[in-house]
Length: 277
Ligand SMILES: [Zn+2]
Image 1: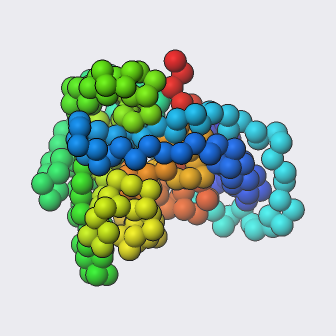
Image 2: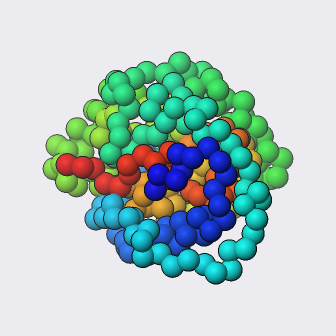
C-alpha cells in the first residue's frame, strides 16, 4: 500500500477501496480475545498493550480483490493535505513512531523523556492534549480515568517472562506484548478506564460504556487514536482495545478521521500483523 508514502491527499476512490479492504480483513479474523487484563498476576498492566489477536492472520493484503466503489464521486480536495514526511515512523523520538508486533522500538530498550499527568508517566508532548481530553470528558459529565501509561522495557520484559513461565511462549504472546513491541514503551500510549462500569476496565465491554463511547467519539479531537479496533486487527496485529489510546497529535488524528483510515501501518506503509516468528 505504498500510495500512503505520497504526500498528497488520497484520492477518494483509494480511501473507499482501503475501507473495503479493512472491512474484509476484520471480518476474516474472528479470534476471541482473552480477558486477562484484570488478572491478579502479574497485574492489571500486564496486557494493556499486549492483547494479541491470537490466530489473527496478517493477511490484509487483498487489495487486488477489493471492488471499486462506483459511488466514490467526492472531489479529491475534500481530503485535507498533510506532510506525512514531517515526522519519522521509525524514530522513537517521533510523535508518529510505529511500534507493533513486527516492528520493535529501536533501540529496543529506548527510554523517552517523561512527565506526569494525574500520576501517570507520559512523554511531555502528550501531556497538554491528554490533560485537555480528560478535562473535556469531565466537562461532559464523563468520568474518564487513567489506568496505565508509560511502561519501560525492563518492566515489560519481566511481565512478559512471567507469562511465559506460567503459560509457555505461545500463550504468553496472546496475553502480553513482547518487550520492545509495546506502544507503552514510547510514552505515547495510555489506557483509560471509567467509573460507570468499573468491571469493564480493560475488557471488551469498555467500548459500550459511557466512557468508552465518549472516547471513541472525541479522542481524535485531542490527537489520540483508539489504536486497536475490530476493523483493523489484521493490520495492527492486536485484538480490539477500546481503552488503548495512542497520541499522534491533532494534525495526523484529523487526517485519519478525514480519510477514514484507522492504522498508522497503512499511513506510513509499515509492516503489521502478528509476530514474524
Ligand atoms: Zn494499552
